[in-house]
Image (spheres, rainbow over the protein chains, first blue to last red):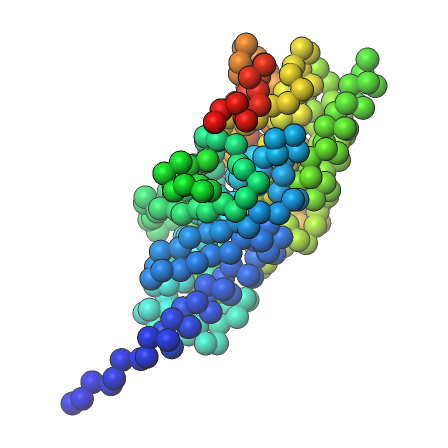
Length: 169
Length: 147
């Protein structure tokens, strides 16, 4: 028996990017802050394009500490949400063609979140990546790093614990 | 004195573009304490299925309120920056309700201010979230000096 030919790379890519976009753009607060996500395979990078309304200290000026915390928390939640969605798409449980905002898997809930402010956030774009250190059936622990011009000079990092949605949600 | 302090505190918050973007309002300010509210807004929703406000917006409110408590401390510098902030989320805030944060700067050293804060919705007996943080205090407050 002949195996079916693999799907063209563009088709696979487009399907995955569309699913990620639905996950991200379905959340009003992520749109409010203007955060976008770029995908390389299963690795995500969050981007916070600079905007004047993100400023917390107009004298420096510097990005608001609350914005930094929110950016890191959004990055952690989407990383976790995407890991759930990705495995459901790859296993065929969810058809990304037909899934809409109402039928996406529920996002994890934050239990606690601790932010270290290492440098002031400069008035320019910021980037962040999250690493899932442990993800069990109920709880997950995630570390997030954020930087601006230089990947090795973090301006903030955070660790948070999250309650995972029930598997059938 | 206290009127002047409230006036200063109001100016403090009005000067913060992101506090304006979240429509934060000063409710009260004392010596090392602050109370700030943030009205419910659909733009701030983190879970579209339930309409619950995103934790990040609550963090921004707590951080602003913590900073305001530090700045209102007697003998405090004009500005401050967050060194560390931990937030515990106890329950989702009820959709449609204003969230109010109350922060207390309970100890200061020459260079660090320690702050506790709580976030509440209309049910004042069951906090939505609590926070603890450390903020810069004193002359070298400007993060710009930490290059």
